Length: 209
Image (cartoon, rainbow, N blue to C red; front, side, top):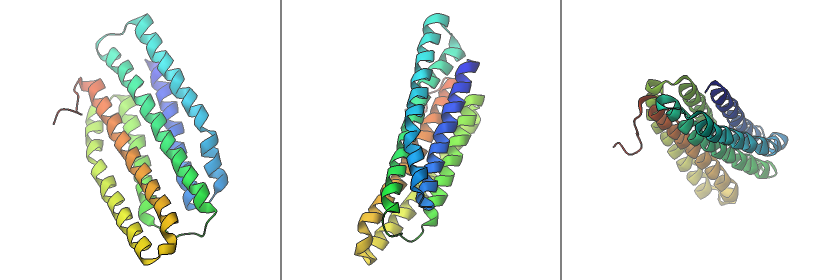
């Protein structure tokens, strides 16, 4: 169990760094940073596969029961989520590379704020998961609404820009996709929190309402 927990922490750390590096590449117009994110994606994929194999071996050879079994099942579900978050980071990095070759758009502070909040939530969700803190996970689920509000402000601002300056439409559309990737990352954070509650309390939140 401890080895699995450590590997999830390592994967989570690499995923979080990928998101932060991708946003750095976008805001600082650093195409090499964007390429670094893309180059590191294979490592994240291999980490996810390794954890998946360890989960299967743990269930087959050790036959864990009760809470330990829920932990292994939760790990098996969390690691693909982290891999998908890393895929979103790669998509942001690709958008950054394209935008960096074009004239710079006005800065959108809400976009940076959204990325920072998504990273903070991801880190907190992983802490709650690895520490088995269901109460903290429940509190984080409610924070997703803040991300949704920021996302809507970004969409409105970018649509206003496109209407006022048609020449920015292609570039602004790329930023819309970046914002959508960040919004999806926050949704995945909610999924991690729901798995934490399942692991610690044996309660399924997704279909409880």
